[in-house]
Amino acid sequence: MKRTYENALKILDGRRRRARPSPVAPVAPSRANPGTNANLVGVPSLVGMTEWLQLLGHSDRAIAGLNVIHVAGTKGKGSTCAFAASLLAAHRARTGAPHKVGLYTGPPLRHVRERIQLDQAPISESLFAARFFEIWEPLAAAPRPPRQLQLLLLLALHTFLLAGVDAAVVETHHGGEFDATNVFAAPVATGITAVGLDHVAQLGPRVENVAWHKAGIMKPGAPAFCAPQEDDVAAVLRGRAAEKGVALKVVGVHPLAKALPVPVQRVNCSLAVALCDALLAREGRVLSEADIEAGIAGFRWPGRFQTIRDGGNVWYVDGAHNSLSVGQAAAWFAAETAAGAGAGAGEGEGKREGKGEGEGERRKSVLVFSHFSTERDGPALLQSVIDTGIRPGYVVFTTYRERAGQTLEGEEGEGEGEKEREREREREKEKEREKETEVLETYTRMWQAVDPAAEVAWELDVESALVRVRALGRAGEGRGEDKGEGNGEGKGVEGVEGVEGVEGVDVLITGSLHLVGAALGVLERFGLEV
Image (cartoon, rainbow, N blue to C red; front, side, top):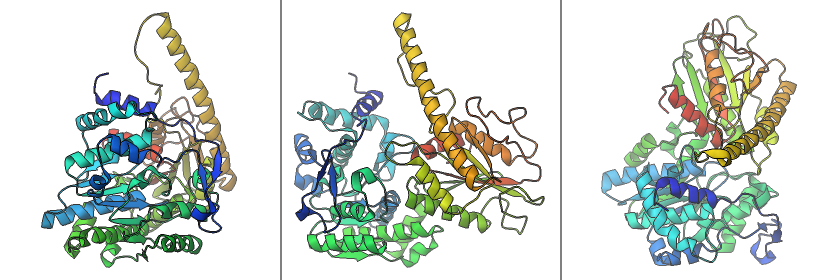
């Protein structure tokens, strides 16, 4: 096999776990905080990590030399990691240290290389391929080769070590205690962002169980920090810290972080400041005010509380995908639009209510939502959005498919064999459409039940959904005769076209990072800077 980027991706996809294991084994009581009933499902992803690193020639001492900041949590861990990388980059610009910063996060929005960054830039396709095959050949011969996420982490650590990284910021995959990223015996600092219910099948059933798992990244000798938590979560974190002999500090909002417009990002930034200070303190250094200001200015985390202006339209993009995060996304959208943050607003012109009943309304509010998952309950997540109280005048549900007509990838060929494979792909595509349609119609009924005045539609691809929404803000530039059929695959419950007197739309896109990644691709094709 040629050592190409495309072939590396094929191998990675082949190592993806197709389903979660079903056997459940209780954790020994001595390891669980009393009352948490922490459960271990299947073989922990941590199992094998140390052996695989040793197989690659990477010792515990070498891994410790990466000076790892390890971050867990339910909401905000990716943003916290990105803030930490930006803050360390700002400190390096002023002082020359650290020499090189590695960042490992996930899941990606557009391409897998986003997971592995050097100095705030995803590694190139050529470097990805080169480093991947360096590790894959020995690992493939192991009695039990790593699965996809384990393989990605091994790739990141291998890349960091060969690049001379001396400060690495690492986000957990799921949980913490049994997570593959918990291979670090001696991180320089650990951080826990806001904890809520997520990945319940693996970490639940209660939020206390989830907190137990997240707290597993704390290590003796490493300063531990956390964002403010609900009382039941805080009690578990304190208990686990005491169990491990770790001093856990709750981080308040840093004065300089108050400049950030989104409240939860102020918390994430403040946690990142504390983590970076803990790393730098090992060499008698600390972030200066100028470092923090520059780090905040240099922070960029697409798809999370991201605002994109599009003439008179404003797209509010957040990949929230659990009940805690969709609540924060909805609150952010409500605050931004109520404050007149949308394009064309803020000058005292018109109302911002999105129902569409009034003659003088100048802006419309829209929700674009999608969530398809075997691990989470999509209708329950949509209910969480409903429970926030936001009532946009227009709601569009969609899938994760970026464009109409996308099919399963297959090699081109000739003859009856290829024709049969093509027919099979078409049959699979039709089954997929049927399943998607059923979910989209469920979402539509749910929203219409709580807000009959809203105009609700669905589309089978993201591009058609965003074209439909974009047309709302363009008076007289609707979709002509195509008022109810969308891309021809999705059925519009209500026709949508340009509305006279509307100066633009404020659009919240949320429900999944997969949706957001596809949406950013579409918005980029619209000619917008994403």
